[in-house]
Length: 398
Ligand code: DI6
Ligand code: FE
Image 1 (cartoon, rainbow, N blue to C red):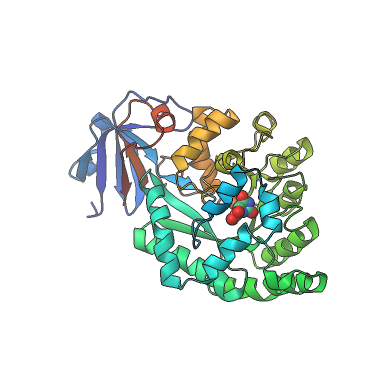
Image 2: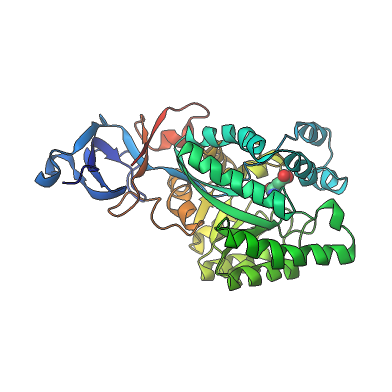
């Protein structure tokens, strides 16, 4: 038996689609970072009987959660804009007057790589403290090669510093930099992002996926399509911020490029739902942004459900529309604001969130999956969603 064999005994294993409060005590055997065996503790095969073991004393085991949409690397904060929004200024108005994403771009550009890591680490730590084992982190506040690269390097450094799995997304078309506002400059800037920044960042191995913000205040369908074309030629998968503030039909475009996910979706229409159902694209719901913007248009949950579209939930942690470094709060919001069930919400931060990142080695407790778990001192999995705030959890990673 290999020295790296380890068993978790007397654990109640939460499993997608089964009871929220499993009764039976099970054992999970881990070998070489993967699940090698799973079953009743009293049927543990002899070959594993002298593995190093942890007695879980009946605690509940889930896969480590996956936060599949964050912008947690950024400089500064936008508390002043929060105050302005409370006085009635809209997110779009703030963006139009040079604030919004652009104020975070200025703050992010002003930091060194080390400063950026220092400011961003606590947000990642918060996620880990609530059972998250995989974090997607987007760039998008640099808006030039050096600063986008700095953001992606910071994201990777955070992964190493915290020993957590980080997936980096090049958010290539998030906002136009101030230096590229006019017609021709706009086209030239997009050219340089697609023809210069993208291949160089891909060459450096910093790009797990690309993303864009498809919206009337951001980038249009034709611009997004150029990015998706270029990414597809480099074999890089696409994601899209779509139908957040209006219906731009970005989801249907993303579906044509077999996007991993489309995210936000408050204004998604029935044709868009059909398109992503066909392409197998994950619908990522971001209730924290819905909540912080005091949006009233709900994403079409019932249509997504009946079309069988996999739904993920993520924190969207960002300084503007979701200053929230809590995935558990997003789960609670998905239930209370969007009407997801507990079961849907748990699948949304495990299996479906992993799929939204193109990862199939995590998000379930099954033989062959990565040994990356959260161990909860709760009676039922509903408690994980129910409690607001502190809930102790042990992150088990082998
Ligand atoms: N949609 C969002 O909600 C975030 N980005 C995006 O494209 C907001 C980013 C910000 O306001 O800083
Ligand atoms: Fe986002």
